[in-house]
Length: 274
Image 1 (cartoon, rainbow, N blue to C red):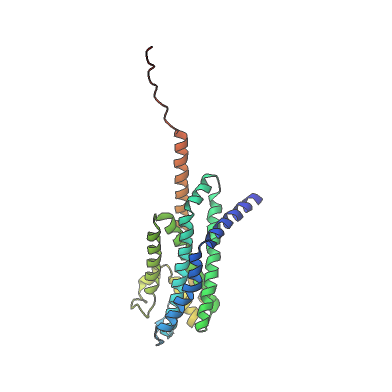
Image 2 (cartoon, rainbow, N blue to C red):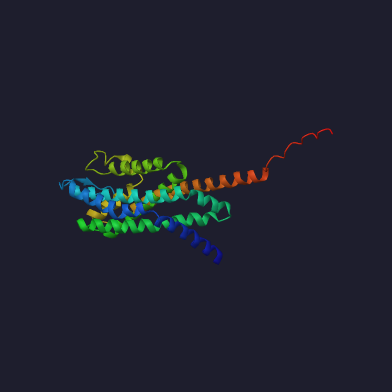
């Protein structure tokens, strides 16, 4: 049991060290997140917008700039966590495979990645909640932080999946940006006329957006929509973990096959006649 704990701690330390080396992600957290959220709040008109919140059934009339700031905060959190996990997975993929080939338990590597994702999502969500509270006072700040946290978990897992599947960094960054932008833009009634469409229920951040909107403008708690978002996280985590399992297993099998086959013996050459 003690050996298993040591292995888990070691793998988690490797993961956290990889995250701390990503200075660009630190700049995104410190600068991009508050800048994007506050710019959305300042630049958008404060005209009230009628919104039927499906989570509670209430007819809300939030200000357009406040609603866009909530969407902007979700967008920033999802982009940052997805980029952080994508960069760690993409750059550390060879290291993970070498550890697996050396006999390091793959469940410990997976648990370490989830621990790093959980810590990163919690820190970014808490920071984003504080930025929103600087602009105005949401009715349920803890529920808002939970919504941002669950969205970060979902997109962090998507970042792991993109890092394991895609071969180029440009492909991964484009996939992350487009997924987050399209996902959240379709759910913002200020910029999208299809925000009440039934198709939005199947978007990755639907549960988080409903919970965040309820937290900002309603007194009704909707923890069930956090579970909706966590179901997206669970589904994405399953796919990501299967991808990681396949990548490490294929490497192991090919290596063992190459070792078992060995080099071909040299063909005998006829001896010269004396």
